Length: 203
Picture 1: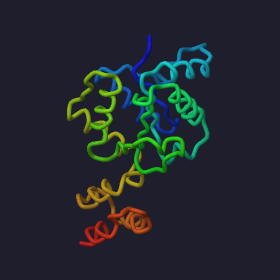
Picture 2 (picture 1 turned 135 degrees about the horizontal axis):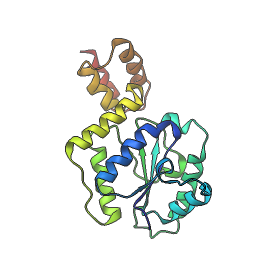
Picture 3 (picture 1 turned 135 degrees about the vertical axis):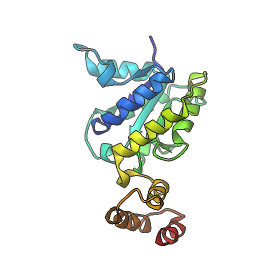
Picture 4 (picture 1 turned 60 degrees about the horizontal axis):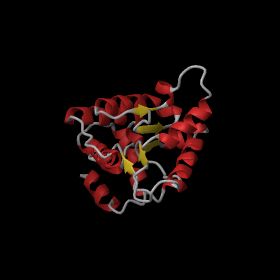
């Protein structure tokens, strides 16, 4: 039976993907990812290729730590890009999301990429899935907050966006030592709002 969403991820992000799978499943989405769905004895490469081809959506979770590691995760991305070429151009199929701040691989730069650590991004993902699956997909607000908090715990403050870092700094959620290195990161970034952010953080 065809599945709604194939989740592609790096092993280093497995803990969050387990939470994401549970979140989407509770929202009524059928999810395939290897640690849950791959049965013993199956020829895993063939199964993964078949599932990528037959899934309605290829959801790839990108993180700085994950992109830095070797793994079949990178092969899955290339398989999905090839599968997308056979899809109608208006179909939402490839959905790249980032788990915190990280560079976007070249093959996904043509797609709008959402950082799930930012406010509103999980809701945007649900809206995109609703369009792709042609049915309403929603989740309770407390479930969205719990998933986002799970992600922030997984990536740590160093992986958070500048918006998230600013919020956590102003709410006294991080130490001075951590904030010093992250302020330096903002100062060296290409963030168009970095001067405004730095002035706010000085207060």
